[in-house]
Image (cartoon, rainbow, N blue to C red; front, side, top):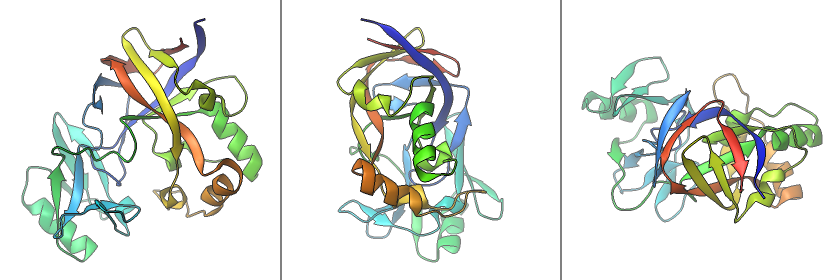
Length: 234
């Protein structure tokens, strides 16, 4: 049975993996996910990409949340901690990133392997945020979870966990298949913009929700997503 579970409240896109991104009112969605999302990453001389954690492919790099990225057309624009902006196609960008981080890095476009940690599109709901805020005893800002889509819903609790394996229609064209809950890492604690570092968020999720918050989905039908679009659970 189809049912309306809410509307798109926010759309966030992160041109460069693991640094701050941009809020947009509309975006094209392809099989890979939101156009340009995490298409770029900061790469060190060993070929590892900047992240909040160290794995076989990724290298933890402190201070990445001091940088911000947005798009002008198809070109990423990177803002340094002092407000200086560089275009992604300007060689001076790599020099600037290296100077700020203190070791040699460069901006690298995704090649054959995705820069995503788990899947193409991440989703959280206002109901889950309300519940988490009640449990912690303080308002939890959605920016901590770096979700692509924030859904405004009146239903209570962590309802998106019940969407796993279900199809959701976003607006008139886009269909997403919810695949699994999202495992959270230390990045949710990190300071960003005016948000202070807060280790209670991850600790609470680990102790009470197996470290999970939100879900990720794959794209089954491409199109465009807009703020205000209806979300229909199918």
